[in-house]
Length: 117
Image 1: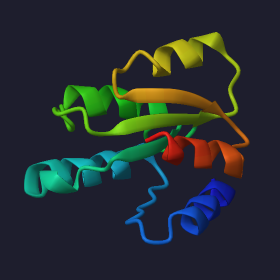
Image 2: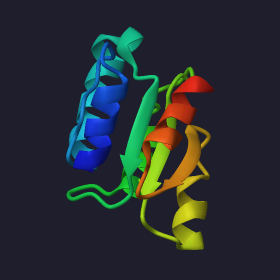
Image 3: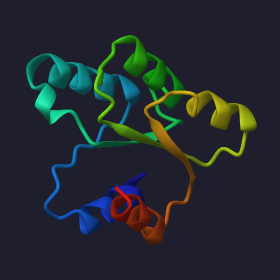
């Protein structure tokens, strides 16, 4: 996801961006935010389904189970090269998931997300 990270950094120069390489690290950070600084709950999460340690589907399950965003502030965008209907249906069942985006993600698609926010 290095290209996607670079795209976000170029587009959102003044934004507070954090990147995690696996779902477990992301969940741990989000739990910490939820417990200690809920006002810092992220507006957006771009979630790759294929990650080590904890994949994107398990991340979504934990995100819901732990009620990390009870106000529904966070919009989750799934990133995947998968064309499997099963992956799409499983990942988009969460009310926090705003959309399923097929890789590669281009600059225009990212721009569209933030201009319609």
